[in-house]
Image (cartoon, rainbow, N blue to C red; front, side):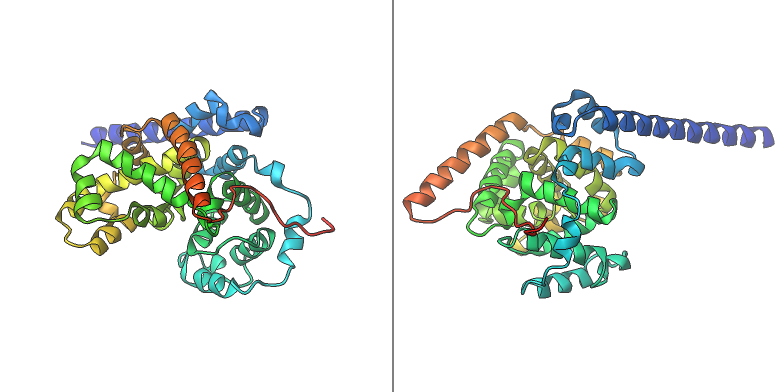
Length: 333
């Protein structure tokens, strides 16, 4: 009996040591890539994509995100501190409200003098035409859980400029475009659920996608799942948002088919029960990649639909905000 217990202990110790060795090897591989791959080429590099599939150790994750977003190219020495010193904008009342009620497990982010308030204050001064919503606080706060304050700021700026800003811009139709792409993907992958929510219940797909896309799923998934979603999103872009939305719908499928109201469906989708999710972040992403979604087609359709929507809006005399990256820097920066 003692011999058997001893063998079991040695076996567990051996497995733990092997796991630690694999973890260290992944760290070393990432550090090697970070030092050799130019950030502007990271999203086209097959080695980067392969390593992303294998996993990103928490110890290097913010460095990987910085690489993927090419955040250092955005950074200008001294600019962040100068932006933090600018006068508070009127919308900052909403920011302080959200900062106080979000991230309850992380008190340092709730302080009105803390890094989250600083980051949002700097960003909203940098891009004064942004339309504030709680999603900005959730995305910025989650970034700060991994990265030092100023690094987090430039990662956040890069994510906003590359994909997210149109979701927070006045008169932008980006959410409608991406929600339409999501509804098409849902119809292809699950006709029964698609008919229930989009036809029978008449739910606007934008109402499903808004809580997901404007928070990058921070409000919907556990933190370690969010980290894994972001790892792949920063490489693949918008198709990952659609895939993850499909995965959440799949996890909520039984509850949705039994639901009798739009409010119930939207409640399940905004915050699915943790027990409904696959047992690990990697298993969740495996589910997301199991759906029939042609990522390149999504990118092409997105551009085509954006042009169609813009043309239609112009014919109706509506002025749309361009998906640009204009910023408002301090004059003496």
